[in-house]
Amino acid sequence: MEERFFSKLVFELKEAFFDLIFPSDIYCISCKNPIFNEPYSLCESCRQKITWVGDHSCSRCGKILEPWYFSDKCRDCTQTSHYFTRGFSCVEYGEIERKIIIDFKYYGKGYYGKNIAEMMSDKLKKMDMTIDCIVPVPLHPLKEKERGYNQSFLVAKHLSHLTGLPLKANVLKRIQYTLPQNKLHLKDRKKNLQGAFEVNQSGVLIGNNILLVDDVYTTGNTADACSKALVDQGAENVYIITYAIGKNE
Ligand SMILES: [Zn+2]
Ligand SMILES: [Zn+2]
Image 1 (cartoon, rainbow, N blue to C red):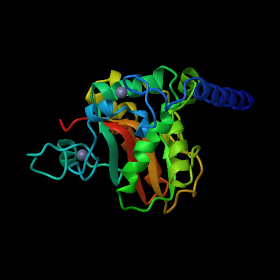
Image 2 (image 1 turned 135 degrees about the vertical axis):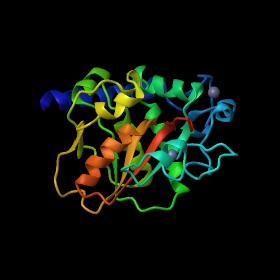
Image 3 (image 1 turned 90 degrees about the horizontal axis):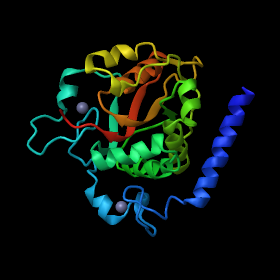
């Protein structure tokens, strides 16, 4: 426990240090060119290159629908039932969008969490729903130790500050060390996450409308596995917000 506290403290200090040396609002988080006071720390040119999710999106998971597309639900959501009520995403998962998340997750740029939370907060302002608390998708403790931080927790922490919604960071646990989803075939992804998440405090979520925070939504298997654990423990609705979402394929 002490070790965990110590590594968290080291991370917080590191984050503050990096923010001092490389303040996140001086360089564009995509092209790294100098910027001055730009939304989400993205220069105008990068903001234009990014595919933002607009109103014409899946009424269930939030994927962008093509202008000619015939249904209000994406191909996946017309065939699959989900445990969550609705999903929202800020951008579509393409090359530029992916690079930002790779830097954020694997290259120590934890301070991007603030920019991503700002995108999410703006997205949520346009939505009309009641949310009682924010829950980040957890990493397995071993993976968190390896990476030094849980990227979803960082985003959720900033989102909680921006929206004033309480953060329940420790209620959902990852109890299995699973293989990375993107290394598996589509058919194995769901199985990989079976029983991977658990709510560790009984009764605290009864009747709650939860906003689950994750970085990327692709097949929705992670969102579903977490939502099932939360709904099984009495959550009324689980809404998902992610930075990026896959295409309607
Ligand atoms: Zn840029
Ligand atoms: Zn959908």
